[in-house]
Amino acid sequence: MRLANSVARVLRREGMAVDVAYDGTAALDRAVGVDYDVVVLDRDLPGVPGDEVCRWLMREPRRTRVLMLTAAGTIAERVQGLTIGADDYLPKPFAYPELVARIRALGRRSQPAVPPVLVHGDLALDSARRVATRAGTRLALNPKELAVLEYLLAARGRVVSAEELLERVWDEAADPFTTTVKATMNRLRSKLGEPPVIETVPRAGYRI
Image 1 (tube, rainbow, N blue to C red):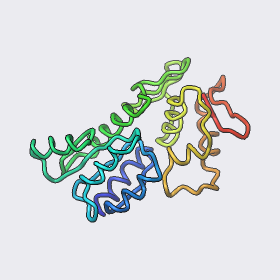
Image 2 (cartoon, rainbow, N blue to C red):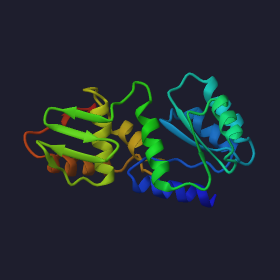
Image 3 (spheres, rainbow, N blue to C red):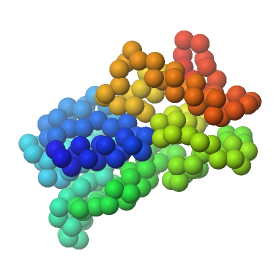
Image 4 (cartoon, helix red, strand yellow):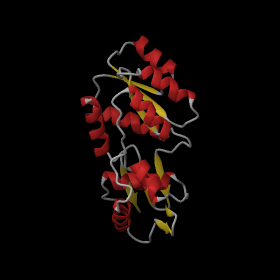
């Protein structure tokens, strides 16, 4: 539980939306209802083992990528974890910057694949370095603003609703009736400058 809370705290600080499950049963319950981009799965989960959770995820037609954590770091253990269906494998203890980098790399491999640098006109976002620029000038965006911009750019012109942004960029702690999406969007628009990049589609959402 302590490790899960610590990982969640670090990932949220990086602007990621995070749901936490403390055992295998809860992990399966969450996975049934949400098509996650990346699942960080502890192999030593209580209840339903992490291996069984991974096998279930691999049986379902979904885009979810699995990063497996384990205290066992032998080559045989890593091979077994990858054979089960995990996309990546990280032995404990691990460095949080490496965990974050691996999660971002897996997220870019979700379907459809997202390029490491997203570009729209003079606007560019480097997903790996977490840097956004416009006309060559770096934008002072906080992690959540970067995450919203990245999601809109990755949508490639598709309209993204406020509800979808809440689900994909925020997490289970977000109030569905909050104005946080609108407030974040207003700040982001201001920082992006002129001419406007983000379009509001009435009664539908936002798009770039």
